[in-house]
Length: 214
Length: 214
Image (cartoon, rainbow over all chains, first blue to last red; front, top):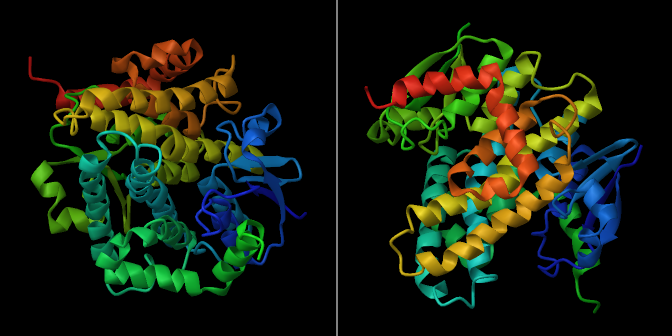
């Protein structure tokens, strides 16, 4: 059965691939699962029909027969469970790869999202300029630790996994800031992710919706 | 094989149960798995031996034979996978319960942690007082949505699951603030979690380490 995901009718990033549907598209492309997309406007995201699918009024969602899921990490995990290619088969290696899924979303992404908030929602506040260095320093702490762990490896835990998919997606949010370039092995890690054919297909698919008509 | 977890030698919360080892203890108590605890000092958390276990220099970690895990969500998930009692057996129900695990840690907890940061690390900053209402409002948005979804149900998705365990643990961080009491169904939900015998055993175990000697 072909799953249906939701995506922004018009992504706030204008097609840079940072909307979270790109992560789900990437996972589906990695495992070779075709999918359909339903676009949702910002007003519709807060209406009862969408809130029934996603209690926090966001995208993406995932529908497959009678199953409806929300929350990007859970959707990527579901895809990785149902198909080969995104998680190791051996139990311990699988648990370690899943650890990186949670680490990407719970430990590495929150300070990065704080930077987005500081630069957008709080950009006009009187404290915006003075507070920014604190926010950036918190990101640097995490990136320093992640860089030390990754070392010269290609991926976080053996072969490419759903943990890398989410970690690369999280780190991609930093490219515009220049912070990622302070950690050459992380910049190279992100570049390896972006070079994967599945990522390129996912990126192109979201760009086709979000790019300004030429 | 008896697993070993790590916990703070002295928790910053003085035994209120907010340190993340309580979540892992709770999961182990729910499934009836005995465990051992190794206490780690703040300086030791940043030393190579601990960083080899936990790249971000935090607690808890989980060691079981040759398997070493970090990241609370991943550890709770591992326990739930290996034992009955924390995730439904039926595939779709299981995927929905896992969704709430990610939702607790990725969507509900970050704004709550921002409040902790605003009240501690940033408490002495010149913007502290003026910024606080923004931080609290972001929490209210999430709690309002969560409250609407929970409604009059006891748990988020049928029977108690690892999703509830993590969501209750996340919401417990708010009790001192009084914000939780603005949502009576969420306050009752948290109280149901705390009333579970497994939670009470987990809480007592961390308290025995952290309570000031009488």
